[in-house]
Amino acid sequence: MHPDKVEHLVALWDEYVQKNNVILPSRSVYEGLEGQLPERFTQVPGYPPLIYSKQFIPPADMTTEAK
Image (tube, rainbow, N blue to C red; front, side, top):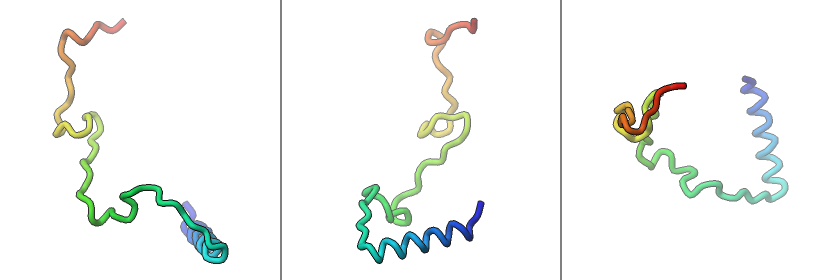
């Protein structure tokens, strides 16, 4: 919403980190590897993930009539 303000705050944070020798923990073993890892599966609204975009229809014995 305010990219100029965000940029200013990030610059202040970076300055603080350098002045105070802040050591930031690694949040993820994959952090920084976005360009080297394969693409994640896209999520399509209305479909469960990783099912090749086949809509899930439960078997008849797993459904009940709406009340």
